[in-house]
Length: 150
Image (cartoon, rainbow, N blue to C red; front, side, top):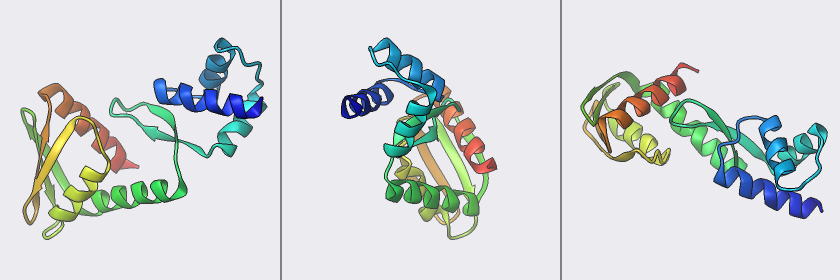
């Protein structure tokens, strides 16, 4: 029963943006599982689920290994430590960094695997990130500003 519930949880979070334990419990109940809040909380801990920020600025559960989480933290730290400013020219983000840090920051941005970002080109202190659309460029900017403020 527990194994089936864990499989359902992984399927639910893969197919939906689940923000809270209550949302997860409701989705499990809809799929036929009888669960309590304590059970859901325990399952989250056992499955090592964590929350990440979506490009829309919301939170969602994902399964992560401690290595993945540590890597993401490192990428965010590189971006925070090197970031100076950001602007967009339609669908191109222009990110200014501390001198000599643009390549590291671009690699960190690429490693975040944001679906809207097609790729980055870096110089010494400037990154040009190609984003699919102007609207998605704004979303990526909002996401990055939110991540950098923490």
